[in-house]
Image 1 (cartoon, rainbow, N blue to C red):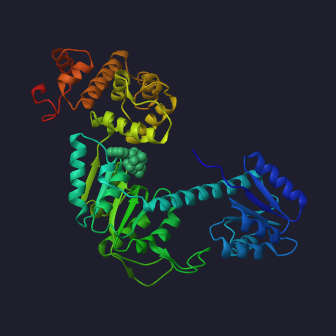
Image 2: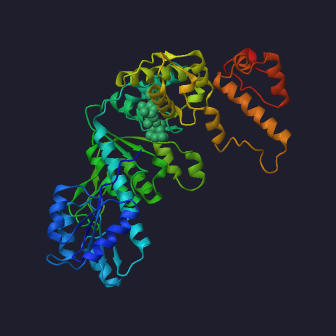
Image 3: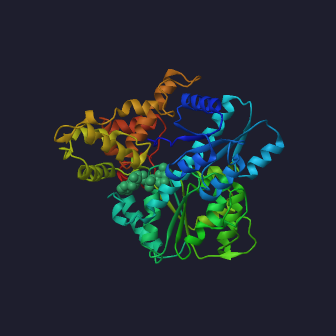
Length: 470
Ligand SMILES: Nc1ncnc2c1ncn2[C@@H]1O[C@H](COP(=O)(O)OP(=O)(O)OP(=O)(O)O)[C@@H](O)[C@H]1O
Ligand SMILES: [Mg+2]
């Protein structure tokens, strides 16, 4: 759910131009405000939030160039697009120098305009996301927030306690929605650095060019728009912890700089020469397959080893057995406190339905499912009908096609499906043959027979020792 974008401010002393820009942008779904002069526009800017400014280079009073200068000094983050009489390289340079992030020469195609506006909208979204991350920085994390009674989760909480007390770097891996952010936060809260700053940066949410200056800061004049010196967030995190989320999305040049930083905590601000040094603990996370990213040449192996001092591998929810129900109850209590709803628990059938789903979106998905169920449910307990139709969703997932693959026979497809279903049942039941057989309404003996026929093996030492079929 994205918030509506603020309006675009169009500044031009020609009425026709204002009108046509307003119509074009309006048709694309943008709210538009107009001003006849830079003076009028500055007044508006002082009072309202805008997505971006589009200004003509030539205006009645103050020129477009002067106007851009004022915008840059007062609202450095506000993107401005300049429209010049013709597209010449010289005018382009002047517009950019004055602080425009882009320029258009008349006449221009509507697509060029839309492109420029779309880029500004994207930038706006990213800035907003990071502001949200920052405003959540005061959030308190604790071990109690990490809910789950399975052995995996108990071990996880123990490992967090042990590792938090040290200064070791931590790399957190796990599918999307498995709780990586919670773990990172708990590590900081339980560490000796808890009284200092906990700084979070989402490497995927910031364009590569801005990420370096976000991390390490910049000197005045380092690039267009760098009007003031800005300290890096690593400086903010001095004596505290920095959490680099989605680390696998960081570009290679910056990976090299991060590697150097990890060696001794030293860095240089963008456009600077002075070597600075901080004492920061680093925690990183990614939901991507980092080994595959290394193999594909997208992630530096040496950086991986530096980050990977302690590795947390968060299990997907489908591998956590009954934790699905423990978490469902947890979210039920949580949302009940906020909503006015009669629902107090789950019916047995609803429980069964929750246990049968594969949860590709993990805990985040479960949380959303429970929130939705509480909105829909009118009875005392949550019924299966208030839960999504998981069967449809499972079929929609790309790795479980409803059709045989192009060169696959029906028999082969059935065999594959059977194998997947059995594997799923085993996974959900901690690889206990007895429970998986119960789930599939088979005897243990016939499940074992089918597995032998499909050439499936039970991993040794898992769940049900007596269930080994070898
Ligand atoms: N064990 C847990 N107990 C309670 N809530 C949890 C647990 N794990 C995750 N959550 C909740 O699920 C949601 C997703 O968790 P989180 O944001 O930490 O996932 P993530 O691993 O960082 O996912 P992504 O890779 O998509 O960023 C959050 O609302 C979080 O509070
Ligand atoms: Mg996350």
